Image 1: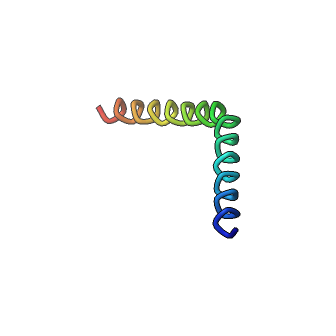
Image 2: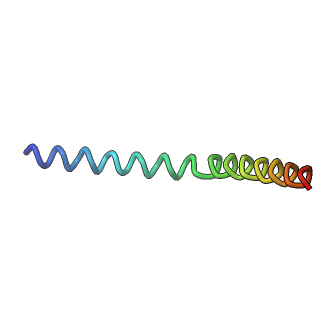
Length: 51
């Protein structure tokens, strides 16, 4: 009985995590892309100033 409840809880947790990933995957990826692009621009500007 205890193992069955534990298994059911883990399956529920997995389903919840999968649903959250599917719902919020694109917005998070877009924000990460923006952040990476900003960082690249800053690095390029700093390198150009150094030379």
